[in-house]
Length: 170
Image (cartoon, rainbow, N blue to C red; front, side, top):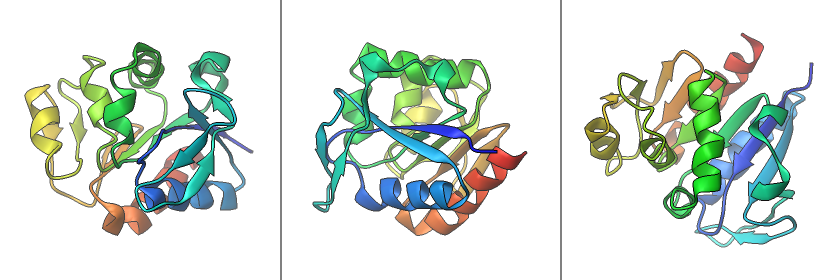
């Protein structure tokens, strides 16, 4: 059964942290919708890859999706200053919906106030921040806390991609 996955991104996303999970999810038969500030927005990754948003944040509701993907790079830091994206992420954390974040992606969790007691990982410089926000932080390729899946870097993508597809089938 096809699942609908939202991927929230903006410029300076870590290119492969969007393209690789998106490809793995679509290969599994799922539909990935790229969401940014506006629909049809050209997004330029850190390495120069061009992506196009399918929807703007004001056009979607989190209830329309089965899961959420938050790639890293500098994108999450930009998105966390916008209450609309924080609210979107809050829904998935609060409702225990499948939520997949890699590298700097967990930065968005800090603004939700819902990290206390959650087990996760992130990029080296983000781990202390989520720890200060109350998370139990591990330095492992993939950390699973219920339906929350986190990873550290692009090197973890094979394990991350395998685990997010598995969680969608659970």
